[in-house]
Length: 311
Length: 285
Image (cartoon, rainbow over all chains, first blue to last red; front, top):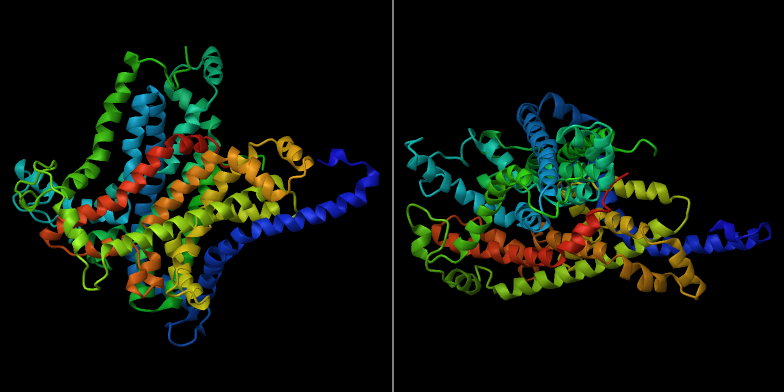
């Protein structure tokens, strides 16, 4: 753009740039306003409230780091159940789900277009069924009486004699949550990886084979992943967000917060527990801040792996 | 040698992939098929033992019951459907409008704070709304939006992923094309209408798909921001049914799930080639 102007035009250009800047600001305004109001401001409020005691009725009173100190020293449920649960769950559903979605995307790229489209649709569908649907289907699959599909199969095969209360006891609760979350985790990150792999220039593979590449494993490590790093990063971010946004799953399955013996208690349920059940908003906010920090840490790791170094 | 991506023809080397992918696809889709069948089962089959997946004598009775049930509130389901349709439509339109404007600015305009602002949006890709449900509620209260339609629409209109995808797509449009339009006397809005929108259609379609998925199934606003039952949405109403655990309700719950799910499926299938096209530009550098 600047090539169009000579030195004499500098004044004109300044005026023009100022006007452009104003126009740009105006066009950006609606998005920026809503973004600020419903994303930025709530995060700021959460940080602010986390240093207070706030019961919704009375004005928040400043308590310094009390909430955080309590969180790490007194809140045994948080330290013993919620935090380990959240890490276990998030590690399997986040990075685990991510690895699965990459492998699936890669396998799909090795077959023909029409079966690929059909199979991709089948794998993607669970990610868009929505909360109500997930609750209805999995509650009846893991129903605690003999009419539950899983109990029925296990009884038929004589593996068990009495139905297992899958959703009301702690024994299998976390495993079931993880299974369901992985089932519904193949969302747009998965789609992004399919198209990422399909867009890799075929000559790269040919050249690498000429240079002595021997098998598909090498192909993935040396060509596929490096060539689609940006999509890998997008997929990673989506996988992390999905893992933490599925926090409602345990409460939906058991129909109660807290979940049976806190077996499926994730950090988002802990926030709801304090925020909307006990109305200790200051404390809930401190837990929210912890959650945002954990999500952020996961993202830093993802960027370390797949971010481009030149920026 | 090499270049086995996206093969044109079938070869024996693909069999091993099919052996993994087909059973997996079946596992993924079976629960969905089960609920759809469940929705069309008569009471006898819902009670049947052992339980079956497929319906033998399909009936639409569950859907009829669902429509006739107006619950304790006396509000018919058609009202909830209408509410959801209006809220979803308005949110999608508003989202498209603000997203395309912002994407144009981030992609084609030069100003000082641009990089920082876009970084903030990138950071917000990992935003977890449930983490700040309480502060969001406080914002809605302060803004006087409790029990207004705004409470449904505005919190979901700005979607960082949507902006990111549309911006990536806008980056592909050559600057020369926009300069030519400006030479012809086009202002920003004309450029957006005549150049940006037609050339970013796949990304806009993707934004529609994603917004639809979020808004159509959203219960946060109805739960927390709305106290007037006649202003709540279908997803909220149907999710309140799903806490009812009687077997008689099972058929209706399945019918409700299908009603919530089918529009998502249809919209995705219609737009899937556009979505895949967008995804090829989804990389984060």
